[in-house]
Picture (cartoon, rainbow, N blue to C red):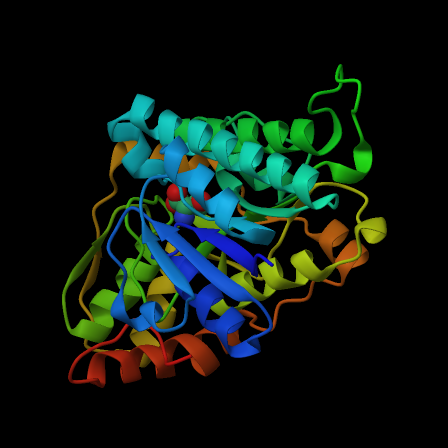
Length: 349
Ligand code: AKB
């Protein structure tokens, strides 16, 4: 009997850390973690196997299919928006070809197992592209089907992969004689806002100014924010991001009226973010040095998202509003993190 597992790509990244620690605590399924980077020791002891490898490596993925019975794939690996602009073609390769490889793996597993393998795909507010600041101010909470005109390679990749997933969920091999809906991939997408973790600092994103500001203040380092004070984005505390993935994974398929869901929790300007940080760290030195390109990217992302579909279909409800995110999670956890003699990325599982 092959062991039933969940496969997590990009396991060493920000969401991966939180997700692995939760799944390990639940303890009902094996965890196979895959990442190009060597394992953070803090997650190593929470997983059944840590594979250091590339999602573009077909042989490696083939070996995983042969060895394990995969219940769910959490495909977290991707190159984020700012980093992707430095080498758009490489980003396309990793973000699109990598996702295609995992979708194919999920399709093969679904057929072997005779049941739909779940594929949880974190997409992003980067799929939206509001042409002007007036449009951004006027449109408020953006719905899933509006303003889908991304201006970054990352946003284009995410939007296209949402479509690829829909294809694998409904139409893959539609000409085949044995075409069968009950063994298609069960593809589910969450479009995340900017995520903020107390444990890890993001790299390569454009919503990073929020978490960077907070972590710099906690470390007593000065920080120059790369967007204007009035710049507004939706954000979410990492525990809510993990919770949303786990809840969408559990949701009965018959309750889902769509494949792609916005999730929101709070929205604030860079200035409001700075004020929250200063309340906790009054000595923090936070200035503004807007970077024109990163500013333009963030200006094209919505100020807030409409997540009423997620609330209606699978009961989405964040635990952390703005006040709770800062006062009950981020500030205490971040103080604790930087007070540790040897910071470890996550609490023990
Ligand atoms: C990024 O800034 O690229 C990400 C995102 C909003 O998806 N954090």
